[in-house]
Amino acid sequence: MKHKGTKNLETKRLILRRFTKDDIKPSYKNWTSDERVCKYVTWPKHKSLEVTEKILSEWIDGYKNDNFYQWAICLKDDEVIGTISVVDLDEDIESVEIGYVIGYDYWGNGYVHEAFEEIIKYLFDEVEVNKIEAMHDVENPNSGKVMLKSGLTYEGCLRQDMKNHRGSLVDIKVYSILREEYLSEK
Image (cartoon, rainbow, N blue to C red; front, side, top):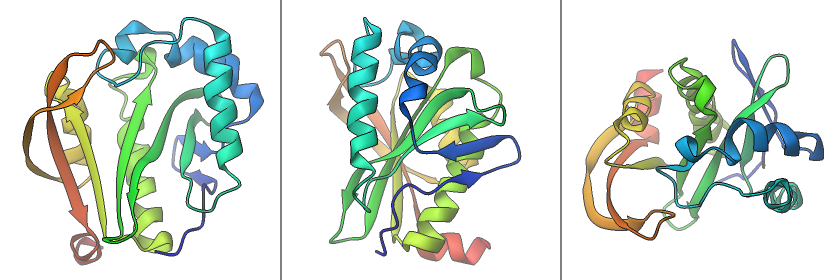
């Protein structure tokens, strides 16, 4: 892989960029404090602005590493509405796992799909990963629809393979796309 870090990317409706301190309040308002958004993820909703500030500060600090990939999903007016990132990276097999979350008020508009497609393009074309994976709690089928629409293939279900933020074991569905598949579709 040729790590290049979190570069600014743009789609028809979105800017994908690094987080800044100015994103703390809108992140808290739009997604980190919303139980509906956090229902299917591994972390609980943020109970205070300070929790969001701590997490975003860690991400901002991570940008000094060229193998750190954490984008703010922003509407063209620069309102941050979510995040998409590499949540796991395996150098040996040149594989990354993508995770994403978006504010409840923005669900169903195709924003995550639009962001994910741009991230896939960047990771295959510039970083030259071999495989991109994503997974979701089986109780969140809409996330799987995003993965399929973004070109990933359903691989299977891993039973009781993840703990959600409430500590419950949940089944997860796994999807992936290989570099050769991506290149053959171009």
